[in-house]
Image 1 (cartoon, rainbow, N blue to C red):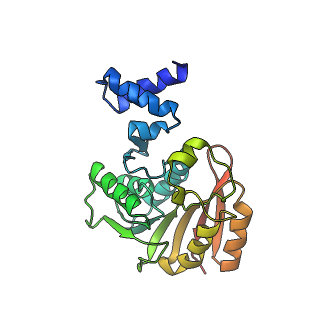
Image 2 (spheres, rainbow, N blue to C red):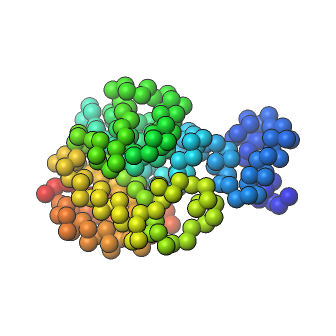
Image 3 (cartoon, rainbow, N blue to C red):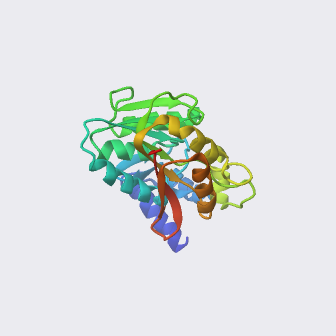
Length: 253
């Protein structure tokens, strides 16, 4: 057994079995890891800004780069003293961003939207695990292909769409195990970003903001799209590794 495998088994004992793992169970898990399955799927959940994100439905595994900009968004929202702030977590996947917003900004209401029934099942599980009632005044789950199932306007929209070009090689642990529909986005990786940006102004209040994640190297293309559509203003942000990976877009036309 390698040093990394011993480390992963220690995490499994703690995070999956609460210290009560049996040898047979750990042997099965080790086999899954050796086959290339991501550790987070084997454990079954992942932390995200104080929330427990259950991964049993195999949504896209939340990334630390997403956590980075989501934390920045939450800090901004917490400064907003309005009694009710309407937020949309679109392309929601596991629901990690919207859940973190609900948990950390108490004056928010969040709509979770995705076209995948399996992703929405994951969101419902995660709302329950994190003690948020589905259909309450704070949380709503909607099946929607981009904005097709939505009619409201929002103060904040959080978007982490698929943005990987079809021809780009991915690690086997990603391409084999994570949902393809949450990753691939046409030949240039911009298929869903284009659709989202064209439709978004109709769903954003005057002065509202979008936090949009995109792939490394896509900044120029996103900038061109924003100029073409005519948003009022936007800034680009770097992740914790110094790479330009998200935009904050304001509706001020």
